[in-house]
Length: 121
Image (tube, rainbow, N blue to C red; front, side):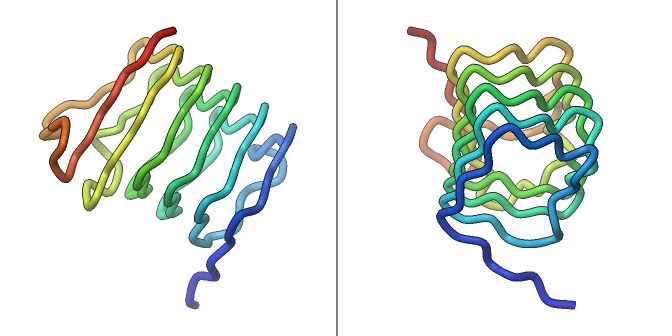
């Protein structure tokens, strides 16, 4: 089954543990106040997506692609980013809670393929 591309859609106040995201590619989408905690996001692809005030705590992100993804004021406790798809991995965090999250063995570079940025206002 091929994945569909979902482009430029806004998702607000959705609990993705109850209503799981379809196995698609999400491009330029905005997720606001959504709950991803304990959800299975395995093999999903997020390209240039923005996540604002979302809860990702303990989500399963096995082989999940985050390419140019931006997280603002998100709760991201206990995530294993080392299980993500490392191809073009680019993450930007602003005022996020990343306690007990792991980036083990990821080669994080400011301007390389793997990017990780933390910003605090």
